[in-house]
Amino acid sequence: MISYVASEDVRSGVHVWIVASVYGVLSLVTLGVFAVDKRLAMAGARRVPERWLHALSLLGGWPGAMLAFRLVRHKNRKPAFVLRTWMFALLHVAAWSVWAFAM
Image (cartoon, rainbow, N blue to C red; front, side, top):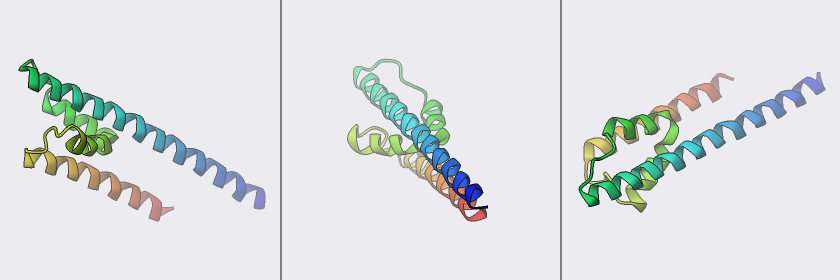
């Protein structure tokens, strides 16, 4: 019984690292895409579609999107865009909370 509990803890710890790594990578990619889009906007070139920026945020890159609002100052003047990103963040937090409390 004790070995089962210990192995269960190790497995859940590994899952935490995998989830954190996925969020980290998606956040870096999202931040990078926001930065590229900002440069394209400043150059007057063709832009990254907003639906792609939203998709990256929804998939888990919302921390990177929120960093981009501050660091790159991109899309922070569009309240609807910022609100949608916050909604994605709250959705993720709610989903993980439900998952955590269900265990």
